Length: 339
Image (cartoon, rainbow, N blue to C red; front, side):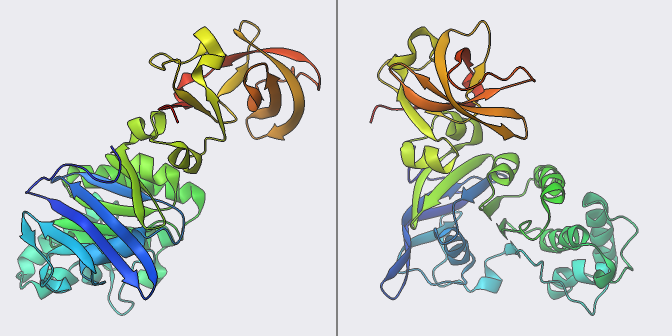
């Protein structure tokens, strides 16, 4: 499915939404629905329109065309503070003059929740995000990851009907991002939070979301469950963004093609899609080799296919001009429809 999906009537519904800045179309006729308790990630390069679309959902950017609805109600004339949506950005935007608990309870104060109710909710959320007992800490004394946990707790405190997250982990280092992405996924599941998550990081999107949408030049190219998107991208443009570098006719690999791939389909290959294996059914000639973190990367020429990447595990690395046998790793091979 590309570009749109079915209407829900109970969650978020976007229909042919467009946002322009002068002569520039930042969001180009995007249609998208998010079911209650579903997490959808928008994935794409910088400038593709994903953050602008999120801001349009929040009411921070006006739309030029199309509709934004929640539970069937048009939000065009509903201001940001009345939409009931939570927002979480890259820098967290915490209040430096408030302690951890004061930040988390801010939205509850604004909603008129009494003191006992606020204290109970703050304690519940700090435990949920792994900061139990730290309510009295100054936010400036926390690490970057801890600050984002506080920001997440604050955004969840009023029980938003939709949580909008715009690159919330991008300022953190890789290892911390990976840990927090896993924790964030679990928190969103445990709280049954409906969420729209914007990121340029493939691993974050696939870890956190139930479905992932790929955007480019303002358009939603494809949206699908993460595994389906990975294995069945809609076309070469989507596949290339996901990291597939070579595209070959499935028929060229004969019986070695993945199960479910027809002879007229196209296979998308990554450097790790082909692996040197003494019992492999595919014959290739080594053209070049280079070191990688996971062993040795090869360029191999396969008759009827051309020159593609491959991987040689272990220490017995074939040299240039060596003939090698290869097996296809179906888990990291995409199947595309005929061009």
